[in-house]
Length: 248
Image 1: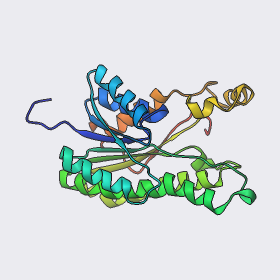
Image 2: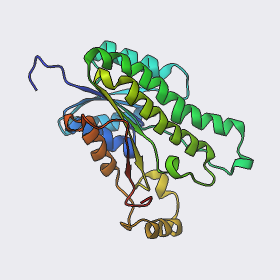
Image 3: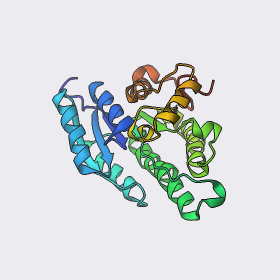
């Protein structure tokens, strides 16, 4: 990249671990300056050091997506500091599982707030600088649960399904401005969250997946890399399912 061409900027939420960390490292290896966003500063710094050790560029930003207005303000600040925003990957999320009849209003609203409302806020803020640059890639990490539903996850499934509709709407509203919007729906991926399921559940999951294994965070990161690239420029409004055939 020539010195007179500013490095492209990618923002990745939930970048301190798991899928978000893998996405951040992949985009850094693709040549993006990556803004790492999460709540845990110590973990973010570790990811930043790994990226820099591999020759990439990144900086860290602590943000609680549950706080209305904070994410939008951060994106505005990043644009002011870095001069451009090219890619936004909304990966951060939370769960508060429970059967619907036992689920409190608070547990439903909190998951919707973080997993859906904050994504809307981030997309709205990022769209403005993307329109100025006539280029943008918005990539929302949804879930196969948002496509098929799941007992005990009414809040999570509703939020992730909402991301699909939000993504399609963004694609239609901003396509003429050079901005694409797509979603990725992972299945069972090897993360801290799935590791806590236990060996018995794990074996059952593996039997239900045609490829007979969990996916790796790096496999989601490769899908993000494609959608963020120039080669993915004619793909928009789509949901890419990366689940080893679980929902086929």
